[in-house]
Image: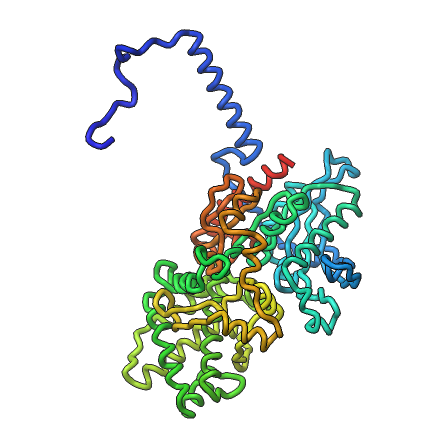
Length: 525
């Protein structure tokens, strides 16, 4: 209470107080000892000592696909009808750490299972250090599964685009469940499985635990934007939230140059202003080295979107070390690429004359080349309106998150105002894929945000402060069996990457928390 202070221990007993009896003291002491012993058991057996620190396992050389066995599984194309057609699903296995009773171990070790994303699975094999660095301590089998319709796992082969109706996250989860069942049977085991995934893979890991709780004991869902649907989860997410985080990365608070955000904002009126004349279109085509000449305002809008997506990718890949993760392994972007890009946007440009505006556009070209020309051998920029290939179909069918469709406002972000309506999305999807989105499907399957989180357990959701996908992640939770991990200096699922001496303390702590929970889940298995 304000106004008076009370002593922590009174100097004498109150008139109504009675002295403790010796029996009461003994009981209190016994209870205290029991609490201490129980506390030590909980911390040492489940989460480790409270003062313990996570010791990074700097693997040198880092393992990759060359350490694994390559496997193909005859997977059903459709798990929910009687269609018997199959396809070859690719997966990688590393079993050198796997403890087996048959080899003299006390018990069979668990399975660490990576839920493949919308890409070539080799990228995840070569990047997911959290699994590699900790599997030996758990005696775990490592499995990386490829997502259908990506990498080399194509139903119907070269004709897969004629059969995209089987490209759904529901079918992918069923793939993983069937594959795991087969692996358990083949090895005559029934061991707990821990699912790992980042980004869409993180969404799959969380949904895997929710939909197949007897298959998955727990899930590490890193940078998993399960609420990045402004229709189904309107109270949790709007598209402008995403671009606000991208803009944060370009701010002094994130280590970027002070002039970066205002100069990026100043670029767009100049770019769009040149769309109205042949001379302006030719100038933009020459300056940005487009592969085909810009001929219309829609071409200029596509150029602007290409530049915006470059900032987006650099924000996702705003790691503290050089990385090729966001370039599909083709070339490294530098450490903190947004800061490097913002260095080009740091000067003060005189926008009252043509020389100053041209200099600003040159700076924007140099800034976005950090991503678009990461290989330093790109002769021209391919301006396009479509991104992510088959993933765009998944957006168009179930509205799984696709940032190129997220609105911007030019106020809380550094871009220009865009309002992309559901009607426009539906028209575009019909034109490109012949499908109309079901905007409420994910919400229908998994329920409201609160109901979803209350109905499950054993999931760690991590989010990075530099990662724009954190805007659609799980940011609040009241379920004690769900854990949220905040990584203020983290970009896109940095916690899943291999340990690096340049890692911020927050990601080291995040990995410690994740490993502690895996230990607890396996102890209770």
